[in-house]
Image (cartoon, rainbow, N blue to C red; front, side):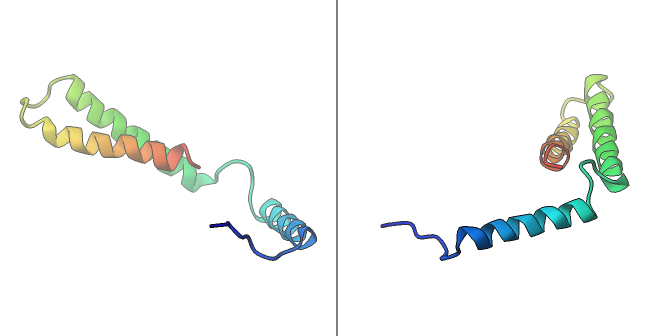
Amino acid sequence: MEIKYGQRSAKEFTAELDEIRRKFLETSTRYGNWKLYVKALMFVLMFLGLYAILAFNLFETVSRIWFIIPLALVIAGIGFNIMHD
């Protein structure tokens, strides 16, 4: 089975890429806005809080499982949300 791509010319494709670049430069910057920084700060604070609870043995061993699960989700959130922005 042969893979077939759309029947667009290189000229049309280049024109569309130029339009996308122009719109990106007009509406965005290379760095995030305040929302990105607030989101990153929240994830880091959640990570530090959950990690501190686990590191300083503030709860019994069985109860700490309920902190491990959110910690794992926060670590995944850091990977998906902060590192991809």
